[in-house]
Amino acid sequence: MVADLRNATDEDLVLELMRRKKLTQQQAMRIMAPKQDLSKVQAEADEWIAKNPELFSVMSQKALDLAKEGKRFSFRLISEEVRWLVKSSGKHDTFKIKDGLMTYIGVRICQAHPEVKPFIKTRKRIL
Image 1 (cartoon, rainbow, N blue to C red):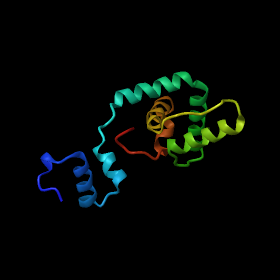
Image 2 (cartoon, rainbow, N blue to C red; image 1 turned 30 degrees about the vertical axis):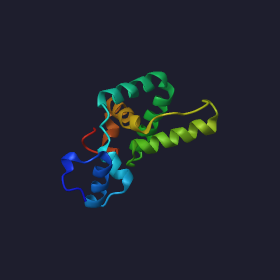
Image 3 (cartoon, rainbow, N blue to C red; image 1 turned 135 degrees about the vertical axis):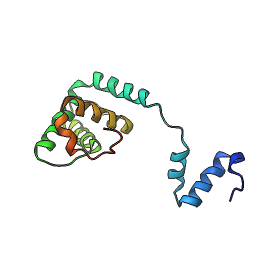
């Protein structure tokens, strides 16, 4: 146990978080990691959309279809389904999208199609 946390090393802080909060090492390290600049992530998401308009369209259509069926969904689900469709169709060599971008791609889908918003499983602070 570290007596004075102000002078503790990062390793000591991670260990203390693990002990006090009963966290795994990975969870504690995630808390300690500096937060990524959200505007940078949003810009990356917009860049991905600009480079992949056909995939964004497929994702948007999948969201609309699920909303019409009255099913709740996450954008992670949509990205995994589109990844599977792309892989099985052979149209694109690879489907690469960072998981962190999917939230903001989802925000863009909600902006384009507000009717899907009530069916999305997400944190309220994002949308």
